[in-house]
Length: 485
Ligand code: NAD
Image (cartoon, rainbow, N blue to C red; front, top):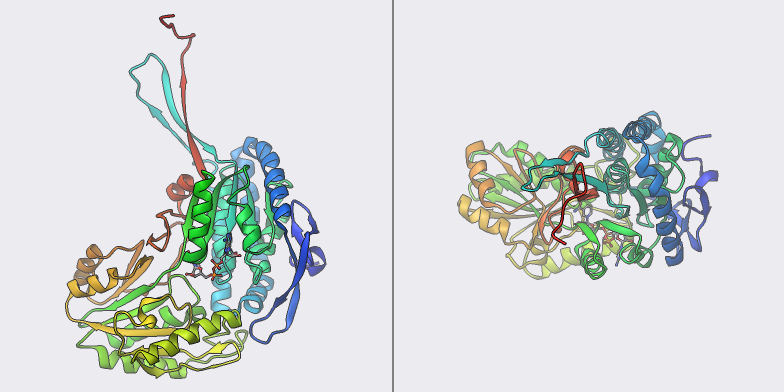
């Protein structure tokens, strides 16, 4: 039997064992050709409430297990991702429309997330405080209890597991709600790896469902922290509900990220970076380069190099080794991309390459002659579209970069000294010099400013410990303290 043998999970949700969900099961579709890959169980709001309750009960024992035991489970889970790579890559490719490199990256990062998380149980340290009282004083880290995780369709495995495993490592239980379009990559894989790794039943629960099911995670009294990755619009709702119910919430939302090409930059290399930044996974990445800001001295050369790339990158079946761009996840997303491209043209922009689609395959698109308020420049497109504008000075580039309400990632290509001057002026959760905007490592603190999130960070010891623990102040005297009455 394989790790993802469908007889185990088909039509089911994972509540410590595989059981039927109360909502109607749905087909899992391959966006490349519309074929049915399997059937996902779906959770109702009541299933989510039950999951929060049983997770809270299971968490108590899990928090008491020795750090070494928790670490061992996570190490085994990481090994399972590595051992079953081929099978898992195949699923990510077919379910999310990913080319081999993107699918491979998801599995590689998932394994690393587990290995990094395995180091956390022994590092959830506190502080020994000084005190003016005659007592010992400590600030110690405790698990928060149950963490609710809500994740999107685009990089479903990474964006689920980056919250799930650090939270578990630190003694929490987790209820995960993956996007119903990608329940296997975003949920079943993690449930199976943790199940096989020997995680006690109930500590992790995985329930595919829609927005209504997700909303339960912001209300259920047993849930203390909500980790949400998705659109800014849904993030606002999640943040409002979590605030009302006094839950801590980590919001990782949209972006409209700029790659800036400085004067003197190598145009061929810059265009390759720019194409990767805009077209990787069909631009369905929160860190996608949505704005190319090119020094006026290089603009013509850069646009023709980018056009050349766009016109020659192979689009099609993502399982073929040479394919660069696969399908958009569904018609709704494709139509939104196309709406923005059409509106851009109507507002006077020039579609230099692409701007067309066949089924769910959208051609890599390059757009110029954009004003600041053109929707292709100002909105997050979430598709394979590279809008280009020019700038004259570093100060002007900074002003344009900062004019977006988002602030997730900035790439700066060219002279390192000039790039650092610009890095000092931009407001962004991540800045990458001589790299484009798409980049994620399991040990690096990831998150955005402004409408890209609420400043929370995942990745690395300090960010993960901050995200998934509470601090308790503990004092201790050798005898009962004397009081005046
Ligand atoms: P979405 O917000 O519609 O859905 C994301 C998840 O939230 C899904 O699981 C969905 O079912 C759930 N959801 C939706 N409404 C909800 C609600 N009211 N309460 C609880 N859960 C709810 O996002 P999408 O359109 O599927 O994904 C694309 C968006 O995600 C883009 O805007 C992209 O930039 C963003 N994204 C951000 C990051 C990041 O790390 N910052 C990473 C990937 C994607």
